[in-house]
Amino acid sequence: MSEEEREKTQQGLWAKLEKRAKEAQAQQPAQDLWTTLRERLDFSKFKPKGVSTVEISKQQFRGEERFILHNTKTDTYLQLDPRGFFLWNLMDGRHSITDLAIAYLNKYGSPPFEQLSSLLTQLKSNGFLEEKTPDLYGLIWNRFGAKSFRSQLVRMWKKVSQAQISIDADRYFDWIYRHGGWLFFSPPAMILFIILSVVGVPLFIWEFIGGDYPLFQTAGSYGLGILTLILLNMVITFIHEHGHGLTVKFYGRKIISGGIMLYWGNPCMFVDTTDMWLGTRKQRIAVSWAGPYAGLIIGSVCAVLIALFPSSAMAPLLFQAAFLGMLNVLMNMNPLLEWDGYYILVNYLEIPGLRAKSFEFIKGPLWQKLSRREKFNREEKIFTAFGIMAAIWAVVAILLLVELWHSNFQMMFNLLWSNWMGKVILTLIGLIILIPLVGSMSVKIWSGVRDAWNAIRKRKQC
Picture 1 (cartoon, one colour):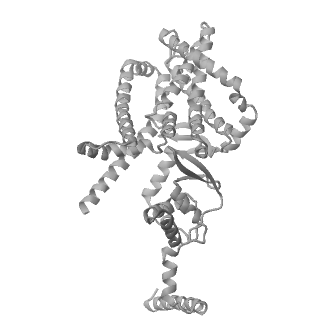
Picture 2 (cartoon, one colour):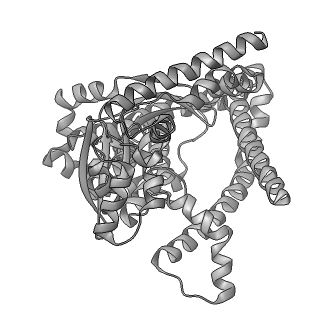
């Protein structure tokens, strides 16, 4: 475009703006062009409006009121305190940001600038506000940034390492619950499960100590033993997730999604139970406990059957299933890992994001308080205890894996590698599990190193 054409285009643009301004001035004579532009760009006159597809649940967290917002259209959730909920109720498209600030100041006696800014960001990012203007930065990214080679590599890796196959889980579990699943929650069934657990756990311990049945072998083969354990573990995980899903339906809530996904490169099943945030604390704990409890029932039933039929050809297979069922309980109930036990603890303590907050506290504030000899409040004591135990557990887990390798897995690996079938099995395990796992860990480590380096550079610039 020539300089002359560019000038004509700019003149045409300003001519249109002046025409619009004159039209507005005919209705409001006191306004000129620049007043009109300032009003259009003035954030204080922005009138946020919440979407109409919102379900609200009032909860109690450590004796304080909290409000859970659920966008039923996008299945997103947000927790607000009473002050945030007060601002949310004013976001009806008629009140400007200035109106919100004045109303908040009159009610609470202080300006809401930081809280209002944070609240608007959270509401927008989670789809709780009606969009009146296009996302300019998103359009620019889709047009230019998303086409870069680096961005394409990131998207490709996410597809490989975090892919998932989802189903209409809510409809699926609703059908199962209505066609017999409700029986698992009947009083006779609950009593039976308690009896099985009380009897099955000591029986399994006795059978495990006895060592009469091989854990890693099937028909005398380590290769078949590993395949059997993998298949049995898939079945137990399948039942574990059904425990979560059916309990959600028992409390009349919705399952957001479910299916199969890659977690750190490893295939696993999942059920999204986020909708339980609209339930009570006891209900959320019950949903988290239902998965490990299903594993406990499986292990107990298998242990009882072994005790009744110790010489059966199925006894070794039942022992493997019992072991995996009990292991499922122990692993998932460990509160130091972000599994069911962790979420039970989070709901019991009513501290969302406990793990992240604990690590953040240990990195800096803990040592500052110790150096100043300041007293710790309730949350700070919990952060300290949880963070230290999580760090100790990480070290113990590594040492335990090394010990298991030397005591059991190394011998098993050597025996498997001595024949062609074993080599095929180990190679497949490596390709399917270890490579994606190492890749995912490498990406996490690289991201951490890059963020740390960027932070150092910013400090030097300052």
